Length: 112
Image (cartoon, rainbow, N blue to C red):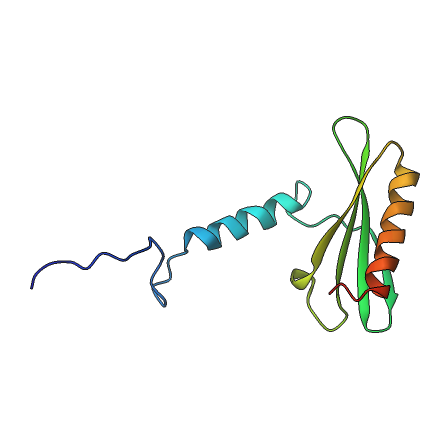
């Protein structure tokens, strides 16, 4: 009777206040998304009806630029954004153009 029951998974109990390994992973990923202050890169906003896209041309250590697109419904918070990679490009202008093109395609194909 005095045996302690071991959980099948090492997850925090609901209501315990402890964070599960998955929650810690999500927090780490959210923190790594942003710049040094922990915020996501700002970028430029696009809108089509009730949908928003935030596009970013992020400089990479090798001198290239990564085009990124984040889409969501206008009524949703930023945390609900869906990330869509749009490729890596030799110039910032190319990355911005690719991100804008990819955002338009996301709007047309309802990728939300």
